[in-house]
Length: 182
Image 1 (cartoon, one colour):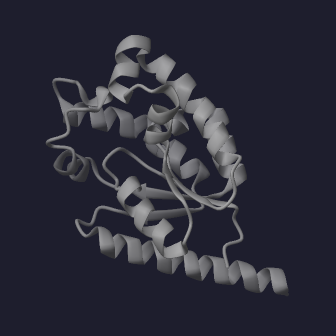
Image 2 (cartoon, helix red, strand yellow):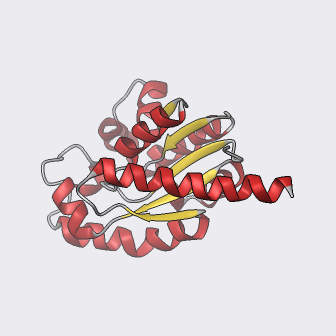
């Protein structure tokens, strides 16, 4: 029923990509991967340590290499990091190798979800709201550029968002199957 080789979840930090991705992968009986975890496993270092030692540019190089490895696989659900779309090559890979779902959320929702999170290097700023708004200004158009499906993930209820996503995928993939059979 899935015409795409992979399902990729993109969106800002705190959108629920990892949580929703795990649930969707389980429902579809597909392996789930979180790109940040893949990077940590591959390098043997945490994301904050990579940022501390190599800076954001070093992290993005590692992210690009790990993403290229992951999109070469077939039949996976992958949650990307929020900034993966900053690289044009990453956007091209994601668009070419799978079905891309943009989980949209508001800055307010991000602030609520990330209130206790002190491990994200890009949020180590005096004004988190200002930082998130600045990132959204740059990244949201890039998410929209490659999204096959946009889904508002502002709900507090992850199970509800997961069900909505599964229903949308079923509807889209059923339509694709019908079109291909015609």
